[in-house]
Image (cartoon, rainbow, N blue to C red; front, top):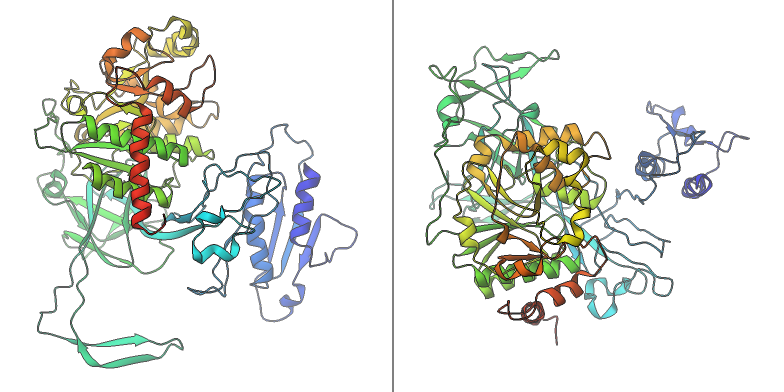
Length: 631
């Protein structure tokens, strides 16, 4: 394997000869560039059997070929190599200095991919970038290349724009959907982050000009010159944009989505935080001491300008108002409950990746909408969804009478990341519940994509959680043949739980007001950061984390009827189930679709899974026909 990696690096640099004769592990290029006034030289020592080398190698080619900088590379492999090599990824760096909007677009080309593995595609982008997939025919979560056809798109599905590439390639495109403001917030009165402080970011209408006023329109020509039009035009009204978030405990981190332009950052109006704090100008010294400007005045807002693609973080300092020096940000309100009304919307959160699970997700959405007596709004995590799903899901939602909105959050760089996509998805499922949704969403029900709903989720929505921030269903123990696979009955988990049940994460309900008020998000992230230092910990991240944290964050155990899974629940209890989950069976493997057809059928269901699937398929055909993509 070492030989293969070294050969790959040598092949990338093959047009150039090494200047260090007799040493096959030492490369040097562009030495003549250093003879002039150029003062920058790049020297790199690489271990070829590491992931960082894979990530930096394409960047080095850009430094050598486009920037023409003097470059020295020394290959320094380890003497002893572990059996479990981490080389399971292929990296390409996208950079093209000659790129224009409609020609020479920057792209990454993957060739000679293995035909014996299922591949998945991920973008590795700067922290301020919200990058989403904009075009794909292939399932980018389950890419397969075969010897006969390679990795190409199916010709009958390819758009005219990509038809010239169909013989050779699978085309997948990404777009920059938005940018992020992120930064730190500190209470200068306490020298600590005001964790839980609610912030809002707004871009107001351009209302400084009256309707009667006008201005000259100007345009910037291709050569950089400015042209002024003769005619007068009416002022352009910018739509109001709004995002909100919470300040986290760790380094006072906050994150808000935006786009290029001028924005106003505020402490959320009408909140307890706006009564306690006001903003002040200042900095943090290299020693960590907070320095408030001498002429600092009390401010209610801060202007932020999104002017480039490399936001390095914003510092927000707040100070307690006189008389609020020791006031808590959240009141100890143990009696406050989130209750529903007849016309209230039931908010449902879910996520999926890959075409198969997107199909299951639509069936889940259809079954929820059919069975729930209240209006339903789905909040779908968009990072892993295909462009075709996003468009067709909106269409289906209009037809079946529900709402769909897509949410996203950028994994902070200070929080230990996950390299495996499934574990990344599990992390998004549990770690950011306090900041993932708008602050006016007071409650959320999470439902796995592979579930079918039999009962009315309004009943679950109105269920009293008895003061707990969230409720989960304990694992069934009524199917005797799988009891031996319930690992929490012995060893570490039995000792740690101390009689508390181990809950399944396929469905849960969150009182977001209490969750935020009790700073549960900060607690879960702190426990995750501690446990994830051991790569063998948190095997089922989204499930193990809340169960492990039970002694600090109480779980309300939902009635068993709220989740039935054939692997753990007896056949006799199926009739009273409110939801059916297609969880994996430890005794044998079975494809999800085959399992769904077998389990979700018969007299217990108003529609079988196949009938629901057919309805979803019909909506898909209608959508394609409306787009002119189906004859």
